[in-house]
Length: 481
Image 1: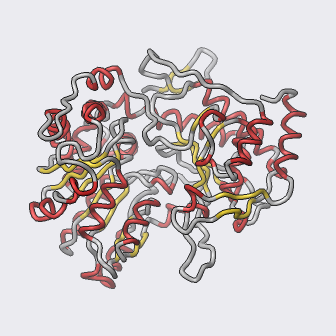
Image 2: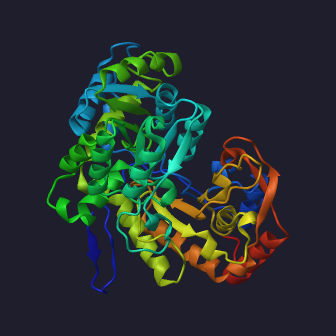
Image 3: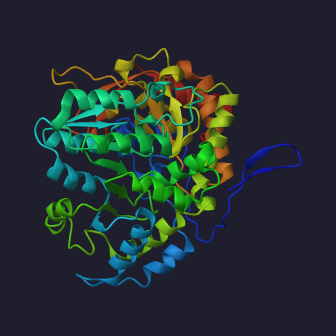
């Protein structure tokens, strides 16, 4: 995807695809959006799709599939065991990751479950650049502890550092010195979801790999967001600008001992898998697949989805395809920065991330700034984002609140889904909300689950700020839309 300049001087990313299938959506009146937010307990996960205009909650399982993917689904081999669809996907993965074995699973968190069950023991310490919520939960369920050691720049919201997802090599050396044999593996998330989709450089991956090999510890890469990360390596890392996407992918994979992924992101279909070379580890994992997922040649996935994933991963080696998300995100980030709206910079993958701490400085972190901002944005726009802050954390062992280092609202841009006019609509409503930010207040728990509370928890508004926000919106727009 290239940035195109109009005769007026305006620049914006131009889609390198055309739309052939559409789905009708509806912008509900603000009174209905407000009611829906109350019914959902101010948790955007609990909203019903019927009330949502633009769904920017996630890029997981909601990316648009290509015509080639749809066609591939029609030739799926639906055999319970030994189906050719599996071997077609295996062949593609062997080409991009150069690894001997592939174990299928129904999605990325299933891979985390299997890997944690085999590798993590009570007392294990797992260093990583950044955790993902389910990753941390699976490691914790096996008695292990996550040790996050990203580069210091990772938590600098407004930054020019091109690879804020990098692991801190000095901190990793210290982790090996202090924890030694208690480290079962080192994990790199390429790129960092909870850091705002920030990428990891190839140089950092290589340096981490060398240190892991020196200490006899496997390096595991979560490749769910790899296609965005490959794009950033190519355009931001000088040593890689003349390499093909496939060449870069091969180099990344050569650094890893284990690669797992959610195909709901990488591959734009629904599934996942683990790739590795180690014979002994493969034999340990193999019986767990039919026990928890499905037989070894489908792993809990629909065979139609397996065919679509094979094509989707091939397409993720195409620069025109993988530039779609980052280009739209960069456009949105740039427009918001011009308006003074605090966002994560530089623009990353996955989505545009609003800095809720700076957006709502008058709201206490104990009243959940990111969750409050996500609720407010839905009420005034019908746009569903995701809280990526303190609500996404878990309480400390003593029961006290564990405050997140950063409070973000993610506005995901699923690949090839939204149009430029929709991106401009969201940008306009975010800018309006920022101008009226003083109307937004905090939230308090109504119902707080013990595990994965950000999925199921319900909150109430502190005071009547949401009613005031609705009133102001109607005054300014003269309409309920």
